[in-house]
Length: 386
Ligand SMILES: *Cc1c(COP(=O)(O)O)cnc(C)c1O
Image 1 (cartoon, protein in one colour):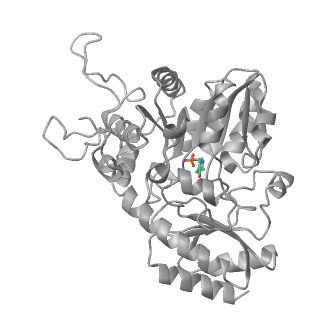
Image 2: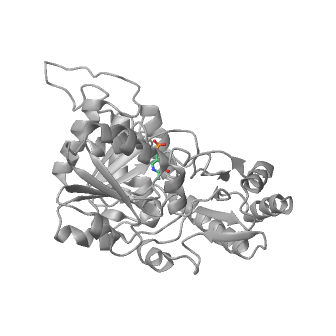
């Protein structure tokens, strides 16, 4: 079925899906099998071994390609396994330029593992004009963007970065975990590879770890599929099924995440004990205008600092919340809060954290889809204690 003209919600539910040919099952069966019968050596139905291909995973991969408006989707055992396969497109001596408020796990993989294999990483402020151009050298083969970024919610202009490819030959990769394709589709702005931690919004229910990459180029797909199969960081069929099921309600969930996050951001901004609120939907946010152009809505993630700027006060607040669960991760139906400096971003050196304003009182919220009045009441009682 030609699906290009369909709306996002229709693609989320039907993208790459047909009723199962065996019995007409409306949901793709969970094919719990490692291997597939062959009639003669090499004669089979397209499946030989489940590290290479599995029909449930294929259903998810087709769906991912559809919702990102790409041509090929690839699923991995985690977001980091997807990042690993993408960086392995490079060779020793190649350079990568990325943002200086990168997801902590990505930063660790780049600097602690791949630097040992001779790949060089430079971290700059992609939101300040000219910094990226100045960091690109003859050997730059990849630019790695995260927008909105984590946890400062900075916005990078994807189209502006893609425009630099005219003069320089690099692959533009966008980690689209925070926005999801419901709000932002980087391939449409000229990115070469979109990557996801599907553990977050795509899965949406905090019950599975999975990663994804989506591309339009056949050549890139071939290389990534080769890396995927060779290194073997592939998801099992049950995990693939859970993410496929999650994606079917992505558009409904995102509407609620975004609406509540916007109202909570405005409420926090007016609160006397709160200092700065980082949410791209606020007019006070530096990236507000670009976000308005490249995102359909402003997302469900926000962070803020306290006037007191004492780590103790931040700890007291997040430990006293009753509906927001104190936990790492994000993007599930339930609201979460966390302290980036000591939790998700502890692997980033303190001086790097300071450079981007990631201070000791910074609190990050993943706004869930509970009733907004209950979430605000919870934050109010927490703030009243400090
Ligand atoms: C969680 C996350 C990752 C890593 O994904 P895993 O599924 O945990 O391996 C990468 N990028 C961002 C922005 C994330 O939030």
